[in-house]
Length: 359
Image 1 (cartoon, one colour):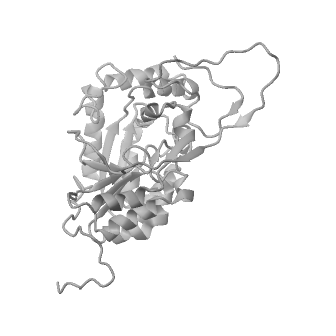
Image 2 (spheres, one colour):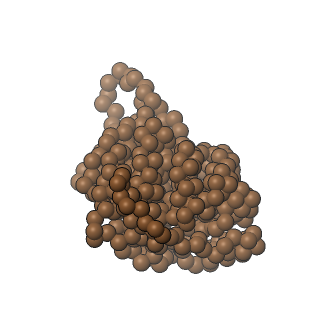
Image 3 (cartoon, one colour):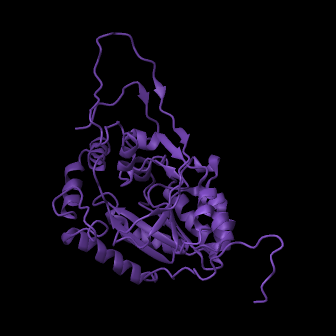
């Protein structure tokens, strides 16, 4: 059960409505009326950003169902506030709530470019594509002010290091020249998440993310600049956006996307009760039906974390969505997969005074 919300907080364009405690907290907090009839001052809940200076920036994973082994996340938390975001539970490791804290208390890593160069310059480093945006969006709204990403991209460009990106943030277009320069050497690819074409539904589910029309323009501008673009129809939520699979693929193909992928909605740990609360607030008449169909894709549970199942789902519900997706992808002429990125040119950038190679 989620705690009662603070009635004195004005929640403008926020996905969650409350601050449930993380699963690692030894105590639970609950608001109670103290009996005093003195009204509290209402205040707008604003985003707070703090800086972090980590010792390393490249995160490694050995998950058998993830197609990359290293990633960079310049931020913890995400102001987009997508209610279904599988990364919300990561705020529990910070002693913060996966609810409102996840989208209002952001940690930035401004030293990321320097740390990245230090790590890839080690003699023991072995090159492979680095994935950006795997946990939270590196182009979330605060990036337009902090501008951590250009530094990261310049390091990767100078070292000829391949990179992939997953985003829904419009600020990626600010760095279009850097992405295009790397893509021209087959060292960059971008995935853009398009969850729905319904602007009203998007505003409710993803309150501070760009509107669907803006994301299609992002695909267009990225593709026009020569950058391979993958449309990510994710997450697929039964009843809410599942009927739009074909329409999203068509719109993205027309905008310039050349590859496509889909993932059924994942509701790990604290995300499930937050999502249920959101349904009760925004889709009360459909809430039970939607969750029944979500569970039909997850073996009768809200979530199935098993490797090999978490990104695909199971049962007739998941198989039907996947079949529709594959048929539409084939009919629309999408490629089956993205071409491999070039790792062969990786190496330190030339310094002043270095002798030039003849070849």
